[in-house]
Length: 477
Ligand SMILES: [Zn+2]
Image (cartoon, rainbow, N blue to C red):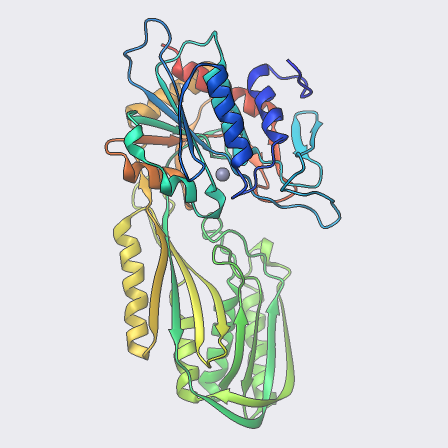
């Protein structure tokens, strides 16, 4: 077997990791990887099912004497995030990922590594093709385009699944077993605003240098949201001297904590406004977490050609002061954020409206409903409209279920180490899949992968080995 990754215990999964790294597989460009998996199924005489959404299910019969045991489902996504360094020449459409091994660390040359979720795909291919492992019947589901909104998993026909236990291999932390993930929904609020064209003195205020981060996984880290900070400063000024907003823009991606915001507003006493802003900035600076230490604020006098009315300005400020980040914590262990909201984006549209984008997350459906209802309520009060979209379900399992305990025991037998149940405040395909398959229990596990979705992505090789050993151990009789 041709293999260049050195010092690994298990040759087979690493062999497959190398092979799939040669196949371009950015989201939406997954025909090649699906074809590869299909051919493996055919060569090994395995039953398979492919669909229009580029998902592929491959089934393996139970080992001799184990044919009638309960089926276990393994699941991973075939696509990877396509990110590269500015100075890297690489086509994600045609070029293989170049793997670089540095001791125990595996990374790619200038691009994402694709360990998310190539490690899961590789382990599943090894389980399907290994001739000397003892396993119960397996249903291995490879889903497409997870990274662009769980697209493949959303299209799959789950009547093909008979398993009652699913191991999702898409976590990035070895010593935890994930038993729940968030559902989410995006909301766009449109505030009609009256704009007056007239020349007046004003202020340009820019804030930046904040760290930002993932609006789910980083939401409880105390990092400032640039839109919320801007709203707070403007409200502070408006309390003492009335302002009329002329322009505001902040945030970029729906799933990121905004790092920057710029606003222009009309105010009569520019000097007084500046001194209030500087005072507010001082107090913000005393309240920053370490990652946000790059925070800066720039203020300058300017002349403006128009502005929103006072009434419209106050509506906008009201929305910018809504509760943000963690809205509530779980009441049972592990104590983690239960429900959160990120005011992701603020824009002035060409039609003179203000558009504000939110993303809400929760493990519980009723809490997503509640967050939407809160936004509807405020919208109604100020004559705005809301549009809720891209909703997907959450999932919350039991930390002491037999399934979790079986995994913990297998991990301890295979590695001599312990693993703890936890939840992640982000989306995983487990939420969608368990909502479609009645009675399906799930856990999500993974090897240690760092800096996901960036060209710095790395995987710890021995961690990959240990997770493979654990899957083997778990599936043993
Ligand atoms: Zn992933």
